[in-house]
Image (cartoon, rainbow, N blue to C red):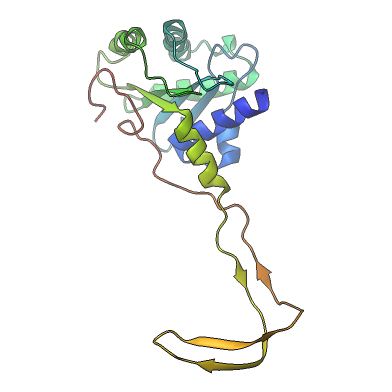
Length: 224
């Protein structure tokens, strides 16, 4: 179950960053002393930090809770204060990178809640988000919130697994061309030794990743 849980965290990270699988997987810090965060993604080029918190349920009934959301804001405070030593080794490295980026006033932080379910955020959780964002957004809007549910995660997983078309080169003997319409066509016999078969590996799909105004349930105002 842990392997499946981590893969969904990686998929969620890919959805918000549009990174390759290996790069997204490197952001996962799930384990002991992860402080309740499953992944920390630091996009230095876009000046954007993503804190991913995954809620797993084998029955697809996961939901966010107020305690976990409070913990997420507490973790953001730890990172902002440079207290990365409280994280595990991988988390410490990612938290340090996040702290360096947070020193810029242009940096955005999106807290991503990954739910293995379809439940919307409860009023209590939404109020925790409003209160937490007020603390961080007193000098401008820097912290946002994004919720991604299991149907979206499964759709992205299927898109990532979709293969491209197969290109098949064959030799026709005998053959002749004919043009019964405006589309050129050929007819002939293909021998047993079929020529070069080119089938691409898994082709990554790259839809637009959620920005602070997509796939998000913005609670405290318009992120733009």
